[in-house]
Image (cartoon, rainbow over the protein chains, first blue to last red):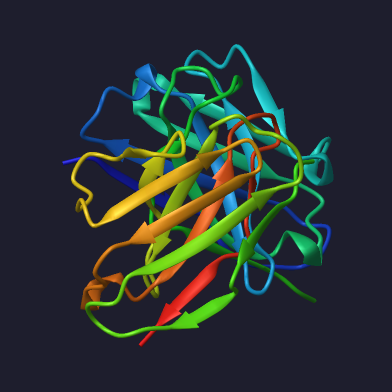
Length: 124
Length: 106
């Protein structure tokens, strides 16, 4: 069974850091690009970051560039998101999502597996 | 970024009804349009990819159509488990963007 389990969310003050993790099982992790997608009430779903199968290419939404770092450890079947200098607008439910392709860029792909999400709350 | 606009934001329907949800892209995205279903408290689930291809395991009452800027998701006969929120998402160019969702209520 394909599974993806996120962790690491929580309550944090503005300006502090969090590290999200997504542990996967049931599929060959290094065959797929991976993404973080967040969901904010009344704002919907937003792609945050993506990474190709071999970490060769990464990408970020403009609002998190320079603050967030995506990484993966294929030996541990795990995806990470280091979130620094957190802002209130970073709050939300963060999902890891599997790409349909090994490459996070390029047209015509989709998220075919999602984790259950981990919640990030940024508040003083 | 490509803006995705869904309509209606919500709709009320009954079991057995046929419903259609519309998604419009701010520019042509060819057929690079995906549909997801999100049930309350759960993660999104892929229903349709590339505008009209049914994801494995998804019931055939779901169908998608369209190309360019205008797309539709149709549920031919609503079942109790179909009451959920539906999102479209373009995968034409980065950053991939989502519609705001259509909530299907009883």
